[in-house]
Image 1 (cartoon, helix red, strand yellow):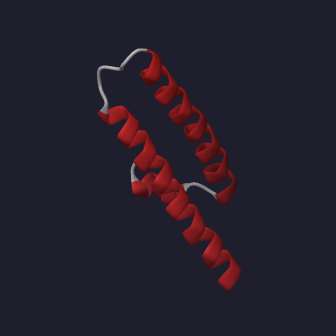
Image 2 (cartoon, rainbow, N blue to C red; image 1 turned 120 degrees about the horizontal axis):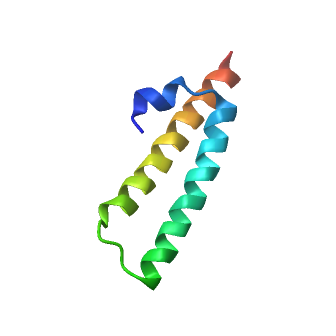
Length: 67
């Protein structure tokens, strides 16, 4: 998910998407521990997507508090 797409989401949608992505990330890591996945970059991409969404969420919350 690109940063521009993340910025278009509302705060509530972002929070829901972050929780979903965290669950998927943990599941992916557990599956990798049992049987290694072919594309290791998927784990890194998932982690970066979560970080990107958390960053945008904190920016949006900060802007709402300043208004």
